[in-house]
Structures are given as C-alpha cells and as structure tokens.
Amino acid sequence: MENDHKNITPCSDMDFINSLPTIDVRYSKSKDEVWNELMALTAAQKPKVKTITLSWIKYAAAACILLLIGFAGFSYFYTSTTYCPKGKHLCVTLPDNSKVELNANSSIRYKPYMWKFIRKVKFEGEAFFDITKGSKFEIESKYGKTFILGTSFNIYARGNDYKVTCYTGKVKVVSTLTSDKILLLPNDHAFITKNGKLEVIKDEKAEEKVLWREHFFLFNATPLKDVFKEIELQYNINIVEKGRFEQAYNGNFAKGMTVEQVLYNVCKPNGLSFVKGPRNNYIITSNAQ
Image (cartoon, rainbow, N blue to C red; front, side):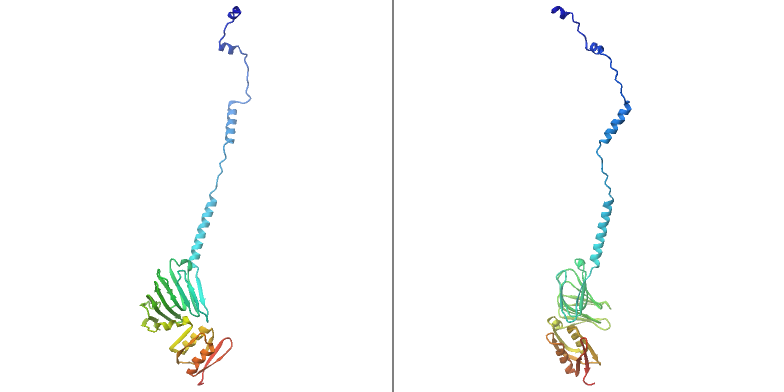
C-alpha cells in the first residue's frame, strides 16, 4: 500500500484546468444587442410619473375672484327699503339696534351689508329716530341732511317741508339747498324756509310734535290744508276741497275716532260740510256756497 501511494504524482490546479476538454460556446446575440435589450427592460420597469395640469387651478382661481367681485358688488348695491303705508305706523330696527318709528306714508332705505362701514339712511315722510351711539350717522332727505352720533329726534320731510326737532343729544342739520348748517340741542326745532335757509327756535312744547307716536294729533293755528293732509295720511282716504279754505284750525283728534267724527269736528267750527264719495273720497264744501 505504501508503494502504491508513493507512485502517485501530485498535479497543480492549472494542470487540472488545462486537462479539461475545450467547449465552444456561441452566443446568438451580439454584445451591443444584449446591452440595448437590458436598457429597454430597465426603462420599462421605471415608475410612471403622472403629469398634473394646472389649467383647472387657473379656472378655479378665476371663478373665486369673480364670486368675490360679485359678492362685493351685491353687498354695496343691495338696499333694504321699508315703506309705511297710509293709515299705518311701523317700527324699524336697524343693524346697530337703532330704532325708527315711521309715521304713515313714510319710507326708509339703507344698505345692510355696508352698515359696519357707513351708517346712512335715505328717508322721506315723518319718523322718530332713537340712534344707538357709535360712528357718524347720516339721514338724507330731499331738502336736508341730519348728522348724529347718538341721540333721539323727530324728522318731518314731506314735499317742500323739512323740520327737525331734537330731544336728546346733539343733532347737526344741513340744508341741501344752501349748505347752511345748524347744531341742535334738546328742544331745538329747525326748519328750512321757502328760500332754503335754515332757521332754529327753542320749542318748549317740543313733545307735542311727537304725539303722533301715541296716535294723537294736536293742531295749534294749523292751516286747514295741513290738517286735511294729516287726516288723509292717518285714515288712508282722499279729501277733495271744493274751494279755497284759508282758515286755521285749533284742536286735536285721536285714531280711536272714526274718520267721519274727525271730519265733523274739523269742518263744523269752520263753516264747512263734507260728504262721502266713491272710492274712499270725501268732498269738503263751504256752507256759505
């Protein structure tokens, strides 16, 4: 056994490799073709990137801008109007809790969505205002403007007449015809004359001017045409005067009375008569005719 082992000649690794038979391996594709296929396969396996267009964002932004412009325009131009018809009295509460008591055939307009920026109303007729303190408050009528901060007062703005009576606080009155300005204190009564001038008097009976709030109407040497005008407003009737009545009337009436009772009390002491016509018309004539 020893002799056999000694006869074996050890061989190196290279001798073993060289002793292996030669194998001819042929590739069906060139190196460039294999490389191109590998690159294509790699590109196919890359995650797809989704492209998001921004055009819809532009349209959405434009729509939002248009909505904002539309809302701003609506807020600026929108006007709330309250009209008190003949034969009625109404109370209006403004956005700042100011109170306005409207007499018959009176109206008030204001912009509720702009109220925080400007407290301003347009008014015609007669009303008692009780204004909450705050920024400047403006009341505009045909022949006059009234400015206040926090006060109570009565305004009569019918036809060519403009009268303001202050009860509390201070009131500035401006004539739109002459730009005259007057500052009123409690019990001051201002009015615009026929030539557009502003005049003011101290009225110790100022409370009588707002008795209409209690549905009571007092007249002191008041021309009949003005008395008939008030009766028309409070009873929603139409009075036709057959003739010119220059008399003045001293007296009063309350809304608890019928219109016939009121007309009788006004006409009789002045030598007048009345008859009821069609469609709520009342015809006034002189007994002397």
